Image (tube, rainbow, N blue to C red; front, side, top):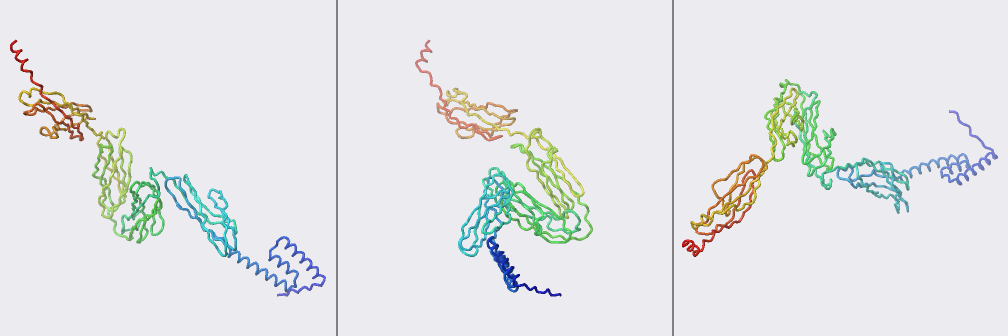
Length: 511
């Protein structure tokens, strides 16, 4: 490589260069130029060797300054929300916090503000710090939300050095829990199992392993959940749970394997079910005959107390099958479900929860169970009875209807007749009996038949008391069916009339 010849400056040229350098250095100082610039300008006034040394020193100064700056950075953690993912009654207060690490030398002022996801900025907060080294403070804020929102919060440090944290995300979902006082009171439990938990056969397309999870709550609540299969999230969901509810998913393995699935509850409470283990053996063998499914033994039941109808039936399969089924009342689908059978098939009893009846449906109708298997479908239909309003009976208090004094001639108290009124809300047969002084009078129970709603008088009579002129005590009418009711006890007192005076009897005979 050719060597560049060193230029020799004359004395006059050196003087001129020095004068220019000095003037440039003064201007740099006047305008607040940094130490690096001053060193570079000062180097021009030095000898070539001195200039080289000064340039090297300037580079070192720049590197040192950069290192010092790197060591004195401000750091801010990602803000955390509590609760982070809220679901429940609103308004709700969400608390946010983040840690700020600040280099302090003597008296230092920390200035920061919150940045909101809607683009707005909070008021600048100033904290005065003393000492040397690093100090960490916790910045906090609370925000009350009255409606649904998904957003983020961040912190921006303005002094002593600028820095901005990452965004801390949160979500608020306002849910009407029908009077539940506080979503924090909700407790959720979960359990999971595989169905079937073992499979051996050809691994062809189609679900082979199904998982069912049971979610239980201590009070009605919306529950968010997800399924994790062998450590990977495979399904999400959100359901309203009043007491307990089943959720599930299925998958088709492509090779022999063992594994597990778990139901994780994300809110309002956080918990996880047990691990539901399964195993699959993919192999080729003589296929079993195609499974056939059927619906049998359908029984309906009408609840006359609240005018609802329910049913139950059996779903049968001759082999392994995943069977879906649908309940319909008078042609309208009201419920659906699914059952899984192993290789040997079998029977599964399924139930239609009670359905409220209204309009023409109260007069009777039909319930149908339809089943859908991998190779065939089937259905069964059965009538249900009309909803009949429950008939009730009431009874009036007992009153004295008459007095029979003929018994007084036999040295007995008078006979007494009683009357009460029975009322029915519909056609029915009333069974009842009378109580005299707390004891049943007569043998067996009496009956009266109503052909329609209405009222009916019933009577009862008793004889006089031997050796007494007064008949007294209590009487009560007790209804046994269709409902139990009583007239209540009525007190009575009947006295024989006094005999005519003897003198009056003599005068009448003489006349």
